[in-house]
Length: 271
Image (cartoon, rainbow, N blue to C red):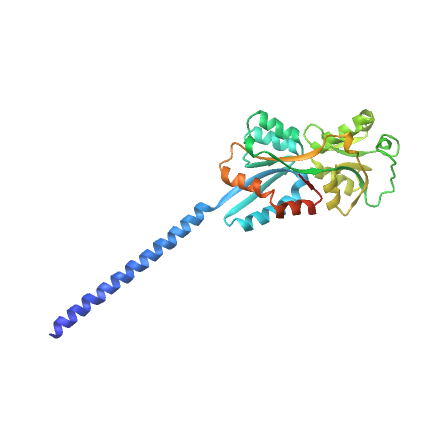
């Protein structure tokens, strides 16, 4: 009788151990599945954006990542023309945000963006800036062509939208050739801003938002809106993206109330 009881006890103990082991195995499997799922859910988006958007987009990226766990936002900032060329040459990018319509139009013409995702996000202004301690005084845009200004910093007009807007301004008063003779050209708007900040030039032309973030320059004048094309920032998803759903979601995120308010904080006019 005692042997029989011991035998059943042993069998019962073994059964409980097997159940416990199976339970642990099941739990480990579920935990492994969760880990695998989290790895699958992680993704990265590369945003090619105009240099003038650098500060605000970095803050937007932080907010987007916080709202989308597992998502990593990386940026490629530069002149819109340079970014356009990179995309045309096959450089990886999921979203493009240009500082002018020209570059986005070129990509659309080559069927390199998803047309239904294109939207106009922002508007900016064009201003003449000088170093903060400058004594230069100009009564009008025409005076830039006089001896009052020895050197002016402009964006390189072939690929830098702010340089293209500046040329339009000077063409409107028939002074482009005179200004070109004293111009130095930057690779993007932030280089123009830096030259003015460092006092390497008498003045420069940048976007109103770039002037607003610098403590080392002051705005001498705002160029008339009628003297250049509207400064519109379009955004679109790149057709070659491997993360179309996430890229579309990011572009939509840029038009949410919270992000619109952030753009306005940095001086942009929201469309």
